[in-house]
Each structure stands twice: as structure tokens, then as C-alpha cells.
Length: 217
Image 1: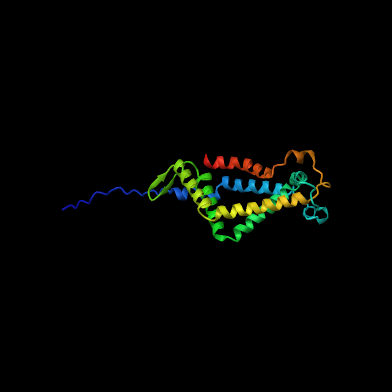
Image 2: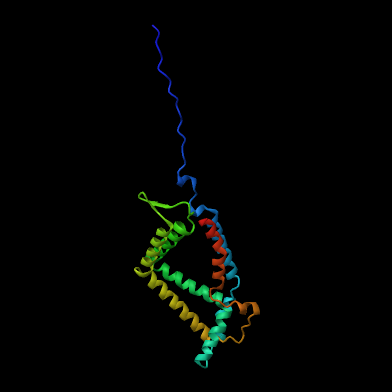
């Protein structure tokens, strides 16, 4: 008797298909996000390099009472043009201190910022968000982020903390500008042309915009 061996079935080795999570680096490791951080850092560094000496800002010998309201407004405008970077640093420090003393507000604000950065701004457009098997489009993601922003700003203490800190900063800047005699301050023509309180922050936003566009592309 001859025994017939059973036919040999072909064996195929299944190929492992990398998942979307493994094939795509996280948003924080993308070149676009690193370029965004580098441009923001460079712009802030350049802006802080234009600050005036703090000894001039705290010179008590230059303090005097303004003659009238119009004189106080003129002083504020001149001092604002000269000390704008210092004023912004003081206001930012006040806002930062207010947030540090309210940790829950700081946590909510950081979560909001991270949501906008990693779920919308630096998320590639070809990678939709999938939650519990449901895919969210860019419009739906944007709508959810807007609702979350409204909740954080208006339905928590974040809005009141930010508004109160900004008001304290503005009041302090206006008080210093009104009582600081600007007769010994001199501005160059180029410095006079750029008198925006957030001028170098606007430069940061314009320089960081290409990184956001590259990430969304």
C-alpha cells in the first residue's frame, strides 16, 4: 500500500501593518511644532532685548505729579512708547503670578492651550480624530474646541482671574506713566514708528504662522 501524504498548504506570513499612532510621530515631536517654539522663543528674546534699563523705570527722582489730566495722558503716551517692553513684562508677571496663585485656573488654561495646539493647530489634516469609533471632521473638532474655550473662560474662574490680573497690570502701568516725567526720555525715529504695546508679539504670531500652515498641510 502506498500512503498518500496530505497536500501541503501554502503558508503566508502576515505582514504587520503599522498603526497610525506608530507611523506618525506625536504633535510635540513634529518639526513644525519645534519650528513654532523656536520662532516664538527668538521673537520673545528679540523683544526683551529692546527693553529699557530697569533703573530708568524705577527712578524715583523722575516722579512728579502731573499738572492736569491732559498732561497725565501725554505722559502716559510718551512713557508707553519708551517703556512698552518693560510695561509688557510687568503686566505678564502680574498675570503669571495670578495664575500661579490659582492653580485650578492655571490647569484649565493649560488644558485649553494644549487642546488647541495638539488637536487642531498642529494636527495633520489627513489624521482625523477618532473617539469611541466615531470620526470627527475638522469642523466638528473646531466647534468642540470653541465650546470648550467658552466653558473654560466664562464658566470657570479663568476669565475672572485673567481680567482682574490684566486690570491690575493696566492700572499699574497707567499710574507709573502718569507720574513719571518723560522729559529725559528720547526715542529714535524707528522706535517711534513701532509704538504698539504688543508689537513684537504680533511679529511672533506672523513668524509662527508658516509653522502652523505646514503642520496642517
